[in-house]
Length: 351
Image 1 (cartoon, helix red, strand yellow):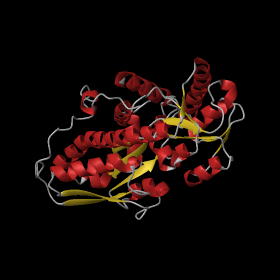
Image 2 (cartoon, helix red, strand yellow):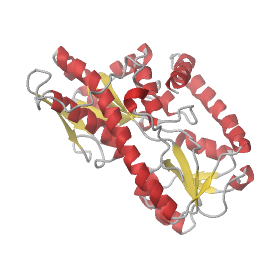
Image 3 (cartoon, rainbow, N blue to C red):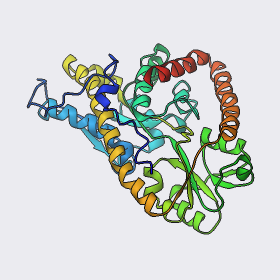
């Protein structure tokens, strides 16, 4: 039984070798450790509080604790400030001080950030993904892309690697994927399609009913929380085991004008708070993974390991998808190959 696909090495140890992610103090925050004026930021989010937003929750709590509440980042869920697909525009015009956005919602607006969303990147853990994101944010090209939208990055919003869960025969050989009806999107969907599956897109709330009625045979989701959230394990027969098909990264950013108006000690605090946010999100994922793995085991799911045959097929599809991204983004005048190389170098360093 796999209890968690997250490294059991503590986050502090995993990040100790970097100067980008500052170590998080182990003890409780002291009141007003960081003196400063009263500041309140509104942060635009969609949906409800969930694993996706726990990194931002951790960052906001850290800032509040360190300033004894003088610097408040008020997280506004449910699209009360803006549509999820318009948060980047809201940052640009200063409609609010901070927001979350996903590059996949508007790839033409932030083409450089799309490199983090490529499928089957060699990033196996959330700790490693946090390091890759922070290294990527430090690249001048990426900083310029944020600046184009009058924004500065605060923290990456991590999502765990995608797996596939489904019904029927175990897809343990490549031929079993041929003709399989599977709901999947983006680069992960392209990989699945390259294996012969018939890929479609079904909204998450409709996934359970579609699988139960046989409209689809399987679905890909971030593992484990999304499968459990939509109860797919209750009707599924199998789940892929550590295939790590890829994951998207969304972003939390501040309006540049609001950021520049902060006193220097608050700017430094926000940089420090990123590590606390990552640690908090990873811890929450780890906690829910343990619960979900038990539920998956009780549901009788069979684990499907990746064979050499399937890995070869996926790698054969992944490389052209990376090359296509490089070609597309290079046409926009960006050093796409350098960006991709930077991701691989950072991933290797973060192992």
